Image (cartoon, rainbow over all chains, first blue to last red; front, side):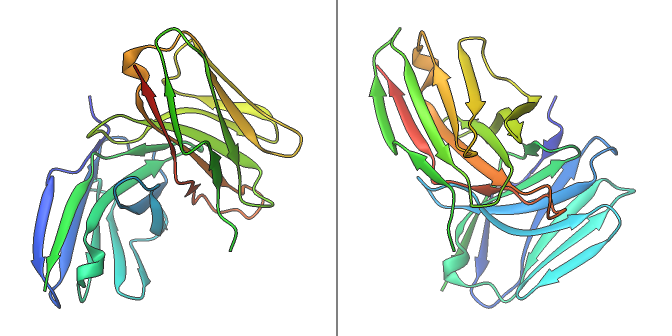
Length: 110
Length: 114
């Protein structure tokens, strides 16, 4: 059974608007959470992370929210830009290795 | 800034052959992870090393082995290759000394088994 779920395989957003990508996890023992961006034929690029002691972390246009009681995290990108178009993976971990969701393909249209 | 280096970038092998993938972590990173990503799949954790010792093991087949050397580079050895081993293999590195948990990924090695 999947421990990390990204239920939306794709998302299309207009340039300048907000993109919200969601991720759910099953194990409350996970204590750090990351978002990666991936282009085809390239390795995942680290975007932003949050530890379990926080509920929000912001870095420029990217904000990650963590709701531990709901075992849910989300990535907000605002304003969205065409260059943000990529596959976004959430990843969770507790002692080193990461468990990835299946990714959400974000398309930002000009 | 220096990134994770993987070689080769592309590799074509036949069934039952062996392959060796190399990974050079970011300087001063002490932990290396290997992941396998099949077509349309998410990256799956294989194995990790911290300070040259295996630290965690995931879904790595018995036909595969890996090690981390004194200069912190790592090699993934794959024997008796099967068609299903065709995938992107990523190496990632992190630094436990810094106290963060972000893993930085290399560009990957695309292995094709024919």
